[in-house]
Image (cartoon, rainbow, N blue to C red; front, side, top):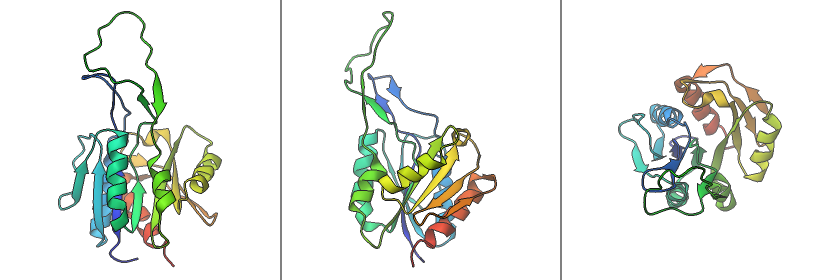
Length: 209
């Protein structure tokens, strides 16, 4: 599909514990940056929704910065109606503290932080996806999780899911398996994230009849 309006999420989220501490992960935003750059080179119109990252993002791309999973959800749902494709490359925190302390917590021996699950953004988008729209998600697993990725594909109404190992986090390269809604599976050779982004953008453009 030419001139796709691509919504790309990138980086981690931060879920505050108190004014100085938070729950997060090691996502760098490298893949989101590479996808936006590849989309631009292919003549598409990318929009980035970015968590807290130091990774530079491509110039000339519409960018919206967020911090928490709730903020990323709100921004994604706000921009989704005007998009053709969502690539959910962000590593959204699965949990957030049930209570955010307004003052810095002081060290006093053991501490228990009660958490609750954050909302699944790509699943929320999948519930409102129109027939002309497509969604791509990621399944980051510690190994042997291709079947789990297939389950996520179905449960979240995805058109394509990228199965990739934990070593992808904060790495310049990725070894991925593409799994399509029609059951087709495409293992990819190890590649740096720029090369992988080029491939994924081409596969994404072929998701329309």
